[in-house]
Structures are given as structure tokens and as C-alpha cells.
Image (cartoon, rainbow, N blue to C red; front, side, top):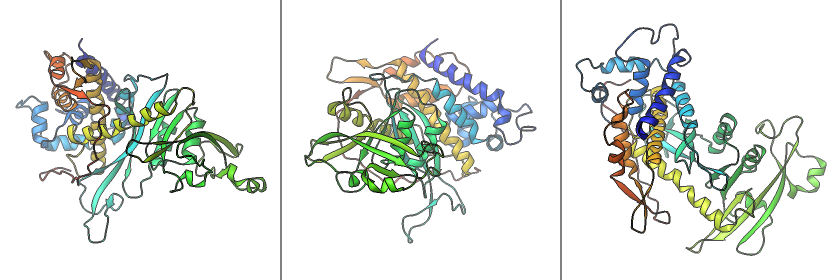
Length: 434
């Protein structure tokens, strides 16, 4: 069995497991998917996972190999509305948990970040409505919080919430509570996540973090810390998180930080009123003359300044994954204007991305007689994998691995370019969708 067939069989195994327990994932267990129809529960799941950016009718024709027995668009809409988004979430978690997760120095590297997703809702939906000023027309946005395995190159966990009023730190607190991450997991964060509660929660789980902090006295955690006079430094800082102020805390406020256990019950409770937190504060100069600050609880002996720079630079892998997720996998395109169906498709896009990355990872990186290391072109691999994922058979199409490996792209790890932020509008379909 080839690489593609092996990964596909693994995905289908998890789909069949969901199918065996489908009563937990449909809205009416006594009626939904109890009769034989052209689109079964498994067919509906696999069709949504493999859908491209075409109309519903064109996607159905491709899935049924242009057969005269192709299900109608109306039938598809009715079938998908019977399935809860939890079915796709459960499939995403079970399938992702089986994917390879390499380590570096015994650590699993996870990047944590979020991305806004434009969604084509219609009518009045105050929860997802978002606008920047009074003159601008309302539009709808959803915020996707994700945990990305940098060495395994796949998404390990995700959480969705309305863009308005979203809280990325609170979302990660929830993921850390719900998700079973492996031992010695290292979570890498950009600015915006720094906070004693987050660091204490990760430390209480015996895990590790690297968080980019705001520079000296410009705000954030470092504003309240007595820092060295040197431009560059690496020192340990101790803080005790407490649930309330007392007389002894007032006597040494520089040693304590108040976090009420009712809002952060992860490491403080009625019996545990104090939690000691120790972390490193590292400041170093970049090539462009600016300075950057990192907060981490990694041991200094194993992870010096050079290693920390390398680790934080790896965080860019999640930004690249968002680009492929939106533009190559198709997170910008939706086949519905209902929030539950949109959530189905977001989970389906995450599953498809992980499937494609699992295939390309096993195909492997190829060394050429040039200055760069080459790997399969991800956009091309996604197109090929989706095309042959539409059929439920597990036989490997002829030369599919060769077809993917024929188109290679160089790996330029040290490449730098300014970030571009174009205005991206949601794509919606102007025919019958629900």
C-alpha cells in the first residue's frame, strides 16, 4: 500500500468510527440517516471534506464521477443539515492525534495563533457582525484559534469564536484544558499572549512556553519588572501568583501578582492560594537594529540565545499554514450561509489540510545538487490529494506519489520579506444554498 492509500485508509477508518456512533452527531437520532439514500452519512462527510471552490452541483458531479445517478443539490443541503459540526470536530481530533509528531531535543514544538475568517452570513446576526467604523457596512467574521505542530506540519487543536470580542488567551486556556498534549510540549506565541495567568497555566501542566513580549517599559509584563541596564540580557524572574491581596503580599508587591481563582481556576483554587512561577526574560538585538524580548521557562543550559532565536523563528510556520489553508485548501469559499454549515466546512478544511500534509510528509524531502533543500509543492499536493480523495476506494491511483513529487519547491528557511495585508472579502455563491 502506497503513502497516499495508507493515509487515506487511516482517515476512512476514523470516518467509519464516526459513522458507527452517528446517533451522537446527528440532530434527530431516531430519524436522521436511517433510510438508504444516495448520500449516506459517510458520503456527506467525505464530500464536504473534499469540496473545492465550485458550485454544489459541480462538486456533486465530481464526487459521483459524473454519473446519471448523482444526488441533487437539494438532497445534499438536506443531508448536511442533519449533521452537527461536532462530528467534523471529533473527526479532526481523532485523525490529527494519529499523525506523526517529531521532536527536537525531546520537545514537541507547537505554534499558537489565530486568524480572522470572513463568513458569508445573511440577515441580522449580531454575534458575528463586525465593522471598524460607523460609515462602514457590517460584515461577518469568525476568529479561528489554532495550535499547529511545527515539526509534524499539521493542526493539532482549534477553537472557533465570533471575531467581535474574541480573546485568544482565553481560547488557548480552553484548548489546554480540553486537549491532551504530549509531555514536553513547547508552545510558541507571538505578542498579545503574554500574561502571568497563561504562563502559570502552562507551567502547572509541566509544559513549556516561548512568548514574545513587548519591549522594555512599553507595556505588558516587562513594564512592571526591574530590568538590567544592559541592552541585551538573559535572567530568571520569579513571581508568585495569588488569589487575593493580604498583609504579607502588600509588604512585597514586587514578588506577587494577583489572579483570582474564579477567573483562572487552572492553577489556583480554594485549597491552593499561591502558585510560584519562574521564567527567563531574554532580550537580544536583531539584524535590523531593533530589539526583541522573549519570555520562556526553557532551561538555559539546553536552550541558549541562539536556540531561542531559532525556535521563535520557527513560529512563522503557522502563518504559512494559514495562507495554504485559506488560498489552497479553500477556507475563503463556503457553500452555505448558515453558521452551523460554515463550521462544518472549517473543520473539514482543517482535516483536508492535515491529510495533505501527512501525504507530503511521508513522501519526504528531496535533496538536489543545489544550495536548497527541496520539498513537494504544497499547493499542487493539495490539488492532487483532494482530487483522489473524492472516491471511497483506497487503491492508490497510478503514480500519485510521483505526481506530487514531480513539482518541488525550495525550502528557504532564512528568507525575509515584509508582510502584506490585503483586504480579503468572503466569497459566496449566488444560487440556492442554505
